[in-house]
Length: 82
Image (cartoon, rainbow, N blue to C red):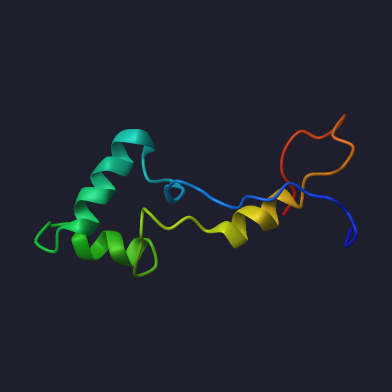
């Protein structure tokens, strides 16, 4: 609803880990690989994630778009809608 009041994210500490990165340990391995050009998986990890990934850059536009999908009446809400 255009006139609706929605929660808005104005600041975030870090980016969300990429989907299917392997949980906490996989994400740490992923970060090590993309930071080190000499890492054996550096190129494949960057290709997998779409070319680049900045762990410090939160995607506020994406976050806020998802927040707008939450219905006002959340009594029957059991997940997000895309």
